[in-house]
Length: 469
Image 1 (cartoon, one colour):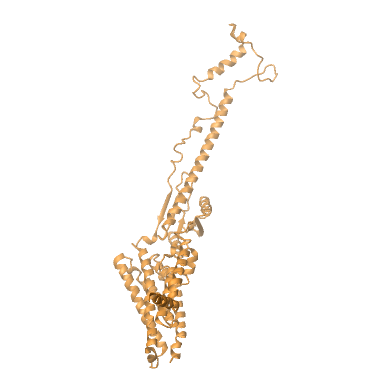
Image 2 (image 1 turned 135 degrees about the vertical axis):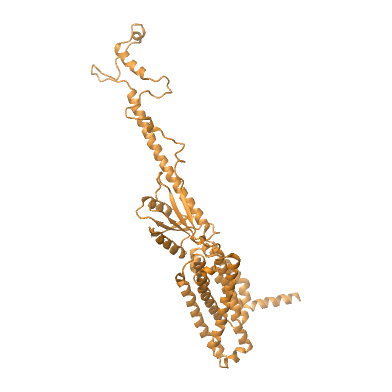
């Protein structure tokens, strides 16, 4: 009997393609998605390069040298964003546009008087959006290393100059200490004729020429061999070689590297709003798909046929179902964000206009997706299995499960094919970057455009219910 039940289970699994899909294909698919996400992300074997945007002053030699050094670093992908505007409004506008593009992990700004000289201050401004905290630490370490290398090179140049000056002083002193050699006979020989020691020490005294040359030299010698010469070279001072080697590395000013996060200036938890958007879109897809499954139940029970033979047309039925799903989606998103505002203080009321725009566009896209899936599937069980695979895949690639900033650039491009990514990018602009409504034009266009295309496809494919009469 046990073998009979085992055979029934095997036959049931073999005859149910959706169950085979969920049991064997879905785990492999999710493994592949997460492997591609993290293969170049935070869990990769190699470091993910930091995308650094550079805003440098024009005509500054020190800034050009720093830019060349940063470009040679394999841990950075540097992009020149142009000349840094002088007025504050222009700088903030460029920073906001760069952050809204989501192409850079960090922005580096240098003042117009940037310099690495010893008497100047090494001033660098880093602007982050708070998504990649490791980028700030990495770039800060690179800048501090560069500044330390510049100071060491300056110390080496000073020591070389001091050593050269000391060598010149020593050479001049040695030349001054040698006795002058005259050659009255014009023979050109360096040494005089040898003098017998007996003539020097037998009491008769040395020749006058020898005494006259020995006495000045002896008079100029120091009392101790450890003392410096009493007469230095003319024109040379002892201050030339007086170098304080102990304080050369610690005498300069410390580098000033400031880190600014405009997003955290006037809000408490911008990251919580992103989590709320990701989770809300994920469950919104499941809820809309479940609500759209009522059309399949009505078709199986014959209720849809009786509605079609009445005065209600197919367009009215599809439009009514779509409107109900749309309103339910708007309400679901509102409940999620109102709760987030009450508990986590995400500043919903100050971004209410942007939230309403993104909530309406996201609900429209999810409603059209749910209606299209209900039209393509034949039974409710088929809809549940197919929708589960598609929704989970889109949510993983679109950022509802894994934040998009930890993904590789390739995965971000693939995620653009899901409206999860466009919805989350729109909510990110509203709550994180605090951008105006005009900046939501790309996200609104994609979401409403995909909603329109899927709605037209639903109307074309829903004709099978009319043909079934």
